[in-house]
Image 1 (cartoon, rainbow, N blue to C red):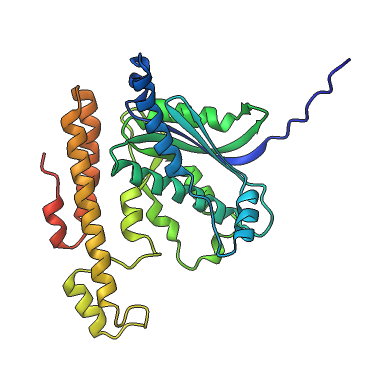
Image 2 (image 1 turned 90 degrees about the horizontal axis):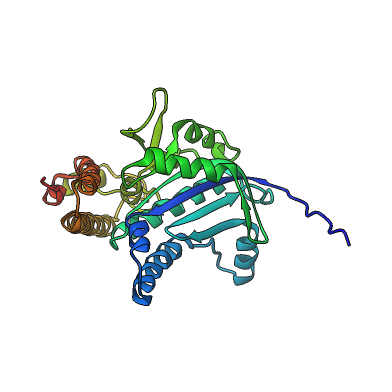
Length: 300
């Protein structure tokens, strides 16, 4: 009997390929059950970091919301595929879906770094199809090529033209402040070709300047702000701001410690060079923070 051909309907999606640094070599050298268990632990941790589904106060609404987001997270050996499909109902604007996707990557990268796992990857947009264990996606091929051929350092890169296109998506006009501006930072790859322009996901800047949390004021800035009697969102919230500053201080101290530990454990200068790039990234953010953060500069 002739088998009926299956209908293939690819969708437009944001697609990311995320590589866990060092895991490829670890898998190649894996010989025992313990070796594979160690590798599985790393992949599972990164996958869990990426699996923060949208939620609401109502469990029924949460199940509906998660079912409509059409998001995929697929672990493949030493890397992961993450995709956000743009075929959800009009309840969600494409820009909001895109930023939800980017923020998930930002949060996951930060959580992984402070736990000693370093990610490298790339984000693209294009067609994506996954059904019955068959994955077809030109966007994934492009993301994989960008990660392997351009990223080089432990960063998640994105073409700057795509960043501009994301800001033209429907829904961007609903945000009086372009809060996506703290998500991206210019990136120059040692392997990029003439005419190419990239950003990388700015996970440290996002954590520090995320508009959902208070800004990191110095004592002098805080006194001046409160003295000028700013709106109620600021007035009288000295303890909140100081608590937030302590959190960021702890974050930067932990980030510094993890980078130094990874650098010390590196076996080759080629690997150490990648961590030195992260040292510079760390220090550039410190330079933009109040002077009492200077103790967390990495001297190298």
